[in-house]
Amino acid sequence: MQNQTSPLILTFGPTDPVGAVGIQADLASFAAMGCHGLSVVTSLLIGDTARIEDIQPVDADWVADQARVVLEDMPVSAFKVGVVGSIENASAIAEIVSDYPEAPLIFDPFLSSQPDQGPDGEELIMALRELLIPQTTLLVVSAVELSRLAETWREPSEEDMLAIDVMRLIEMGCEYVFVTGTPTDLTDVANTLFNSDGVVRHDNWQRISGSYSGAGATLSSTIAALLANGLDVPEAVLEAQEFTIASIANAQRLGMGRLVPDRYFWAREAEGPGEVEPPIQ
Image: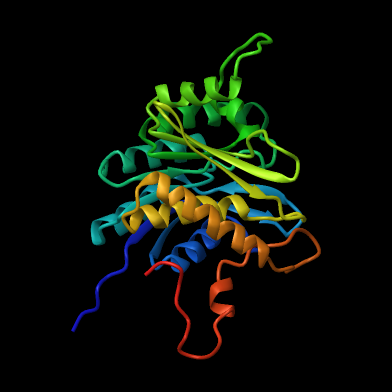
């Protein structure tokens, strides 16, 4: 008798030797939510728990071939896109996901932690803006990264520029924008979800002291998994934040740099064999 198949999620992203970010982080979060992760490698990261030192993109034909072979064999419930690595990769991924408009696309460009790519980096951002954002169901972006991605030229103003930047991205075709690290009290972390009507939800969380690598990756990949499980976007965003906070609270020191969230904290909390249950069934 064949068992029921777990929801399948295809993630496009880099390999991370540490497993803090990239496809390794995505696969761990997917599994914690009861999903099976499929992966397409877009680039290779060189780094440790302290920093990412370099990134080597994979050839765009290889990216496309990895994805097409998998998608011809298996149906996916959602796409998650992280670091694409190059303009050519962005174009290849955009063409692939356009063939599956019914599957939600969660896009976490991870801009602030990548090595400076100079003019090439700005051209890549332009490609992301033109090719992927119009197809995105939910864009996960930090408040620091927001204006760079939205490219809203401005003079000094007393208006809410964060909201203006968000609406610029939504006008490009993005359905939801989830901004992390929105302004709040220094003792809290605030995240805000927007759609075309404005603020959908605003959540405040007590800040956990320490420096972490992979918190954002945990958040975006968990949202993808929850959407694949059938939750709507606002509910998925709330539950993913709760899971990420718990993962950070149980973070591990794997090296001499930043702490890495533990996406399997719930398994380690089990009282004994046979009592392990993931957060989502």
